[in-house]
Length: 450
Image 1 (cartoon, rainbow, N blue to C red):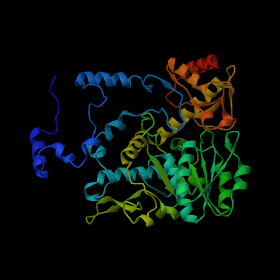
Image 2 (cartoon, rainbow, N blue to C red):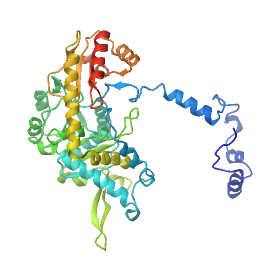
Image 3 (tube, one colour):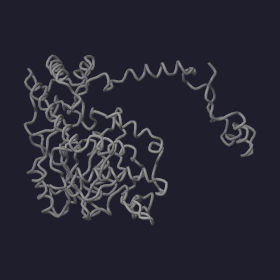
């Protein structure tokens, strides 16, 4: 079939060439010597018609182990949560998915209000005074928190728990290198930050202590015990938190956190094979003007009608680079809108219910799996919806996960990749999506493979 969509006609091409004063496209490359130009045919397949191309792409996508056909027990930062259909319906409206940075508030009121609602939700969940928008993801938000702590205290040492997500710690180290900061990592005991080592690592040059709760192992940190350690030294407490847990757990802001960051992927954002996602960043009022990204504020116009404006833009895109708090220059508002629609759809009680389901199903799974031959729970600390099992040092987790895929299951995360001392340990995530039957089948297969 030759019914192709051609956005540019031959007449369009001729008009453009005439406008720039050349007779052919080849003339545009006349300054490049013929000897260095590619001669021949590119090593790519022949063109396909529309039907054949669609068939080919479906075959390729069919090789992916997606959540529609596989029961996922893999978390480690990206989770299989229920996605209400209304989320995709709202974000598919052209006025949202085509919008970028709302530079002109008079024509961007819908976008600005969406960001304002997101900020309001984050403040309520975290117990903080101010939240921003447009953080890339939870990991970069955590690194930005370290930079803010350095700028606020003028100190050059960041103390971070090894129980923080390994990828987030990598990004923190990259950011710290550019700012000439020292990053000190503190170990863990029984899946939680080692409090003795933490206390001995904090001194008068410590800008911040950074912890994650629930941490990378799924364990819930004792933030109230960590708070006096860093505040007693005059530094800031940064807490990275899965926002879904805040439906049940006390808000970090009420436990003394100065900065609360995290990833809103659990709120209506599909895993999409690893991203994109949307980070959140909330602070105590004292640090508001040091926040990266942007803040949308509520105001009234000259007729007294409610309106929204960008009240703080501290990115280098808006002000002089040496004065900027961050070089973040992208807009994550569409993904923030996903989170806002999810939260407004679920409501306060809905978030509590989903969080309780995660806790109940994860603990049921931990008991079920931990009772099987050759498998034991690695830590006894309280956890949310992820837990660690020890399959033995000789266990080949790559092979085990490959076999689980053959049974229609996506296995857990191999912790030996990031923690040599946890070789043979698997991080398992159980969300509200998993059924009792799936959990039982997963435990059966895991026991057989171990």
